[in-house]
Each structure stands twice: as structure tokens, then as C-alpha cells.
Length: 264
Image 1 (cartoon, rainbow, N blue to C red):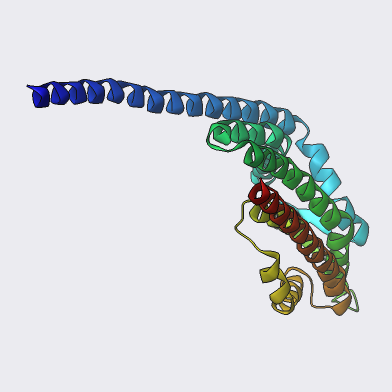
Image 2: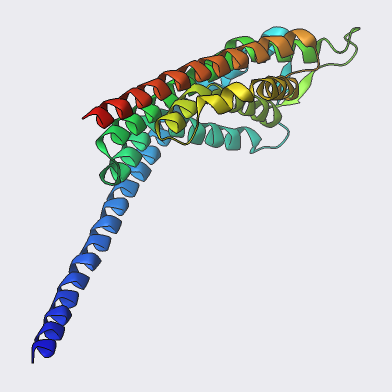
């Protein structure tokens, strides 16, 4: 009789658990759907607004090229219009990124600890700031150097530099995104160090390899002249050294906390 009673109790418990678990999954998916709708709505509104200013943005991006003597054209009837749409989408993503990042953080927040919560939140928005700084560095320093090098290849100026707007904007966007991602290096290192996935000892031991890799990256994303490669590689080396210092500081704080906890 006792065995039968316990079995019945276990069955009742299992029956009670399944609806709550199912409800948790449903609530989780419902929250994801709400946040996704918010992101899509904000992105759509901002993209439409950006489309109204797309001609101003294009004129700003081509200003450096026209000053250096480039002539920009579009080769197909719809080429300029499609570039306006493409640029509006990219601008919409960039301008609505604070909302997107907040929605991502708010969605994953319940599954994180309090300390991890703060780290992830600050890392997301610090990464956005570093991306903007990298893109600004590319626009004001790196890109003019590249364009100036490319137009001076023809010493006698016998060939007119006429570029399609599609190719030019692709070059600009890839340059801005590349430098934006590179400038996020300290944020990524801090996040990985805080989560215990990266040790400062690894960064210190692999410093020589990283220096070589950074110079190779600088050579790939810049024209084949020494000055441009140095001007691009030096900021990446500075960012790497900053990343090493930040990783060491975080590691020291972790060790200190562990010692205090052991003493308690």
C-alpha cells in the first residue's frame, strides 16, 4: 500500500511539473517574439527615416573622393536607387543599434548572474562606442590615405579615375566595418577575461605572434605602401596592448576576490 501511495504522489508531482515547464517555455518564446517585434519595428522606422536623408549621406561619403579627383557614376538606371536602399538599411542598423543591444541584453539578463549582467551590458554599449571610433578613424584617416594612393598610381594622369557608385560605396562600407570591428578588440578581451575564457598569460606569451598577425592584417586592408600600413597597424598594436593591460587588471581583481572568499 505504501508503494502504491508513493507512486501516485510521484505521478501527481510529474503531472504538476510538466505544465509549469511548458508555461516557462511559452513565456520565454513570447518574450523573444515581443522583443523581436520591437527590434523590427524600430529598425523599419529608422530605415525609412534614413532613406529620406540617403542623398545627403552619399554626398558626405563621396566628398573625399571627389576632392581627390575621382569621378563617380552609376552604370545602370536603378544602381543609384538600390545603393540608397542599401545605405538606408546599414544606417538604420547603426542608428537603431542601441535599441537592438538593449533588447538583446534584456532577453539574456534572466539567465545571467548580477556581476555577469553588468559586464555584458557595459560590453555591448562599449563595443558600440569603440565601433563608432574605429569607423571615424577609417573615414578621416585611413580612407583618405587609401584613395590618395590609388589615384596616384597613374603618375602621368593619362587615365581618368571613373568609378561606379556601387563599387565606391562597397569599398567605403567594407573599410568602415573592418576598422570598426578591429577597434572592438579591447571590449572583446575584457568580456572574455571577465567571463574567465581568456587569461592575460596567453596574451603575453602570444604577443610576438599577434604583432605579426596585426601587421599582416594592416597590409591586407591598406594599399601596398609602407606609410599607410604603419598608420593602420600602429592603432591595432596600441589596442592590443590596452587589451593586455585590461586583462591583467581583471585577473588581479579576480584573484583578490578569491583570496577574500577563502579567508571568509
